[in-house]
Length: 256
Image (cartoon, rainbow, N blue to C red; front, side, top):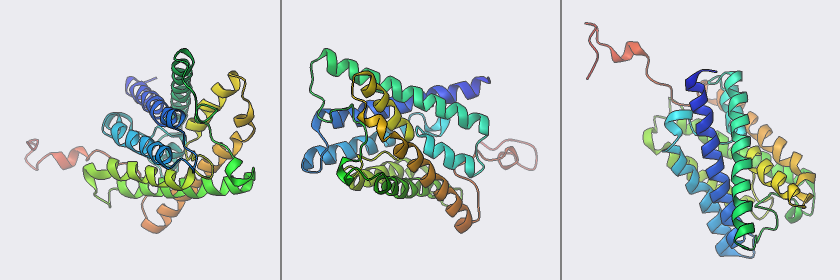
């Protein structure tokens, strides 16, 4: 494994772990049911603002995917090797397990009530247990989220340093709608980690509907990548470094 690739995987591990700790942890602490307006908004902001912070922290190392669905969109767009895709997904899932484990330790040792009842896991109770309804929610919300990422980070967009802010607030927005329906996943790792930790703790209910929160985001991300390629006519998701030829003058001297 190349050292550069390993650093990217570590960055994705850290970013996903932080997302789960701050996002799911906020939901566990304040509650995020639709009747609890304060907790609802705080949870949405926690996920979105974490993305903003991580975008400017690990974004220059790994691109700050911290989400297997986003990595799939990057892969389909031709800006990532399949080997790196697998490495990213593994790192993201391990990060989600670590984040959920840390939350479990804090809430257990501190005797703190988990107001979600399952470490911030996703569920289908608010859509009457209908898996198809939940799948549609996750596909649509992930499509919106990943399409935004692709557009705002494309070379044609030229949004520069504002991309992280746009992406973070878009994640907040999809959470504002999705929390009251499925708890909002749009991220298979974010759903997998808490569900596994919940099962280990004796609550296997989240595992029963986990496929919705694995396949839904992947389908939405794939659709977003394909649609953007068709509409924009380009296959670049992340901003690539300028070619060496662009940083060298005709006389052979580097630009200052």
